[in-house]
Amino acid sequence: MTSLPEASAFTGGTITEAQFKTAITNQRSYLAGLLGTDGLPATALAALGSLAGQYVAKTGAYTVTTSDRGKVINCTGTFTLSLPAAATAGPGFSLLVKNAGSGTITLDPSGAELVDGAATLALAAGRGVLLSCTGTAWVVLEIPGKVTQTATDATAGRLLKVGDFGLGATAASLVTDYDALTVTGFYRNNAVATGTPIASSLFWSVLHIAHASDGTASQLALRSAGVTSNDMWLRRKSGGAWSTWAKVFHSENLLGTVSQTAGVPTGAVFERGSNANGSYTKFADGTMICYHTFSVGSIVAIGAGTFDNPYMSNPNVTWTFPAAFSAVPVVVMRPAPPAGAAAFSARRRAFTTSAAVNVIACYQIAAVRMGSDATADVFAIDVTATGRWF
Image (cartoon, rainbow, N blue to C red):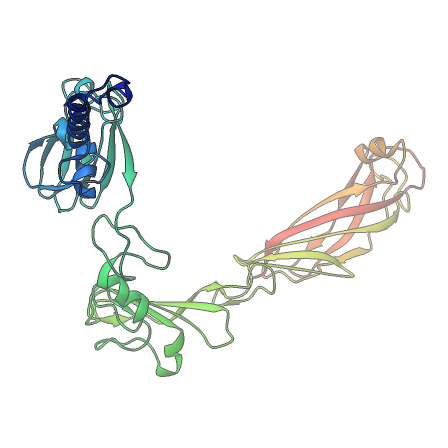
């Protein structure tokens, strides 16, 4: 390309007309080499190698040349786009590559050079990148692709807009028409043609899951018991017959009133209560724990402090359980002596006893002292009973 003339070629005091004309001609040749000969913006952009100044389409293997600087290369098919040596392209050499088809376009640098730190880069369908040369390698900037056009647009390579789910018409059926999704067999009400398990009065609260849309395969039906109910019920179809409804969940059943029908828990998971006879905790599986602390009076109320006739409190104390058991529970008791420096020693030298236990009470409870100490300590008894409420 002709060099740009020096300023002196136009302004020198001894410049002749012929020399001035030559400078003007050289200046035009320089500008034509830089911007093109026709003066059009598109020609100038192409000559300068401006980014996105030119567009070419490729459908097969192609090797990029320095004349492709700034071009948009739109690719369709599955092939390799070979890049020039980074030293040849030079720092700042850039171009845009778009995979507009459904295949894969592989960008392959020269020799052992890298693109984005890898030996090659595969562009999936819909992906576009800006390639820029550093002089020794290639770096990539991602170009956002097309966004989804509808909520159900499942076109490969598109970006999801807020509110879209990109799963196609099948998912749209699930979202917009919950009466029937024939692919996997979801039903909101009694829309199943065969083997409908749902009373019409309960249609509003049923999710019916089937393996086939005709309702003949193994199925599950889930419903709530009524408009104000927190219960969840389940029934299963196997071999063409539906099981009876069984309650599987109660949304407010962590702490409340436990209950059961035919040995099956139907109420809360836990129940707590207390009264003058102590406290109790019931569990949905039938376990119950009762506990209480009460005084048995002086530990030397009767007896003589001997081995044959030890000191003990009057054995006339009965503990009526705060809630009745369904079978005789296991009762554990320990003496609770008065607080003070000698409390541990006093506890160590005492034990408790009772005469009988049934489902409603423990009878003739007493604290017994092991020793001859006649101090009239007033003892309490800590008692726990563990059993079943059903």
